[in-house]
Image (tube, rainbow, N blue to C red; front, side):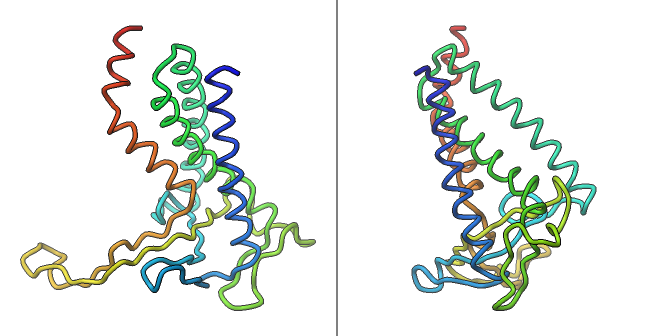
Length: 207
């Protein structure tokens, strides 16, 4: 099996994990429901993100469509880049890093593209969990679905020092964003690229 095919297999297996987690959360929990893992600082917290990674929102419905189209273009570019570096026998860690980022991009676009078509809308109280393939149809159209997020690590609360402009004396929570498995794959891929960036540079110079 070629390195490219091996990398695609890794992407596929990680996507199975990502989608299994999301489908279970979507089907069995209502919005805002929490499962405590390690005290109060590590939780499964079901929320849906209409925008970008780690719970950030981008420009309403128009922004959502633009973001989805951008993700599709980015996925195409990532697949081509993955094929190129695998073909030219870049270090396996470099190929693996790109595969992780590709996994995250595909994982979140699957939510946006299809969850609005195959699920009913999630409610915010018990008994209002989403239904898979409802008779009345999904809650929105193609590419307008919400991304399912669930990992939440509010490790500690604090207050910004008074001398910080605009933020002084305001309370904060670290780490406040709620994210999913796909987001973590993107983060890990980027971190690996930063750590092993010399392998990318040295290999590219020899091509």
